[in-house]
Length: 270
Ligand SMILES: C[S@@+](CC[C@H](N)C(=O)[O-])C[C@H]1O[C@@H](n2cnc3c(N)ncnc32)[C@H](O)[C@@H]1O
Picture 1 (spheres, helix red, strand yellow):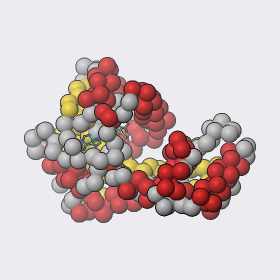
Picture 2 (spheres, rainbow, N blue to C red):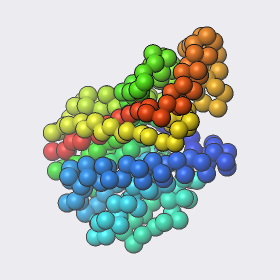
Picture 3 (cartoon, rainbow, N blue to C red):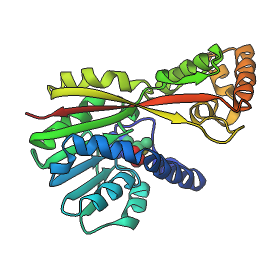
Picture 4 (cartoon, rainbow, N blue to C red):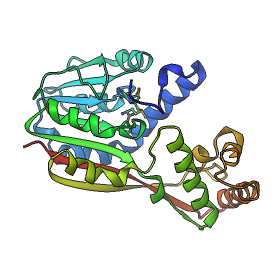
């Protein structure tokens, strides 16, 4: 397995069910935008589609219901997450276990190949993109959706949020996860000789109940109030205390706003 930072099979049972819930609701909340971008960029003409790192199968389920005459194949390297995906098999969907960097399909097998939140967890994303291109038919489309955490904006702004996000990006990188891969997608596509490349940056604006810590900040402070970032030498103890105070203030502001980006790289195999 080439992914280093996301090993679903090693999560304990509680974490597994939390992650399944999170992934499903994350797909739900972006479904409208995602469907629009995918349909407008080749999905509506596709007869055979591959989802690389399909996770719970939430995206496949959504697209397969919209396009009952198209065949959807989901691939993932995690047994456990595939078991969840297989609870929802439709007549036009199937799931298979396999490695994204070594896809178990023949050249030119699919009209449309996509992946979402997978490249960020793999230390050589180039390999996955090369494989996606190999199994895509000439004329077919390839879409990768990833995040870029340094595009997060917060209002009211505190410089401590930028310190936290930067520290989290560095911490994730030490653990094999690239949280600023979004900005690299264009170059990765160009290097793979994918044609007609464009990148759509799609912002997600969040509201959420007052006093709830926004998910990106929650993710960055983790379950130990950001102690791991101090231990890793990425912030000082004084910064950690400032960060936690500013988060508290931010959460209690009824007019607070924050936004982050998903980046969609889109291109054609010619
Ligand atoms: C963050 S989840 C995203 C799932 C899904 N694409 C979504 O957007 O909901 C990442 C998924 O990719 C899978 N994955 C990561 N690296 C992989 C690899 N090298 N080969 C196959 N699957 C991989 C993980 O097991 C996990 O299910």
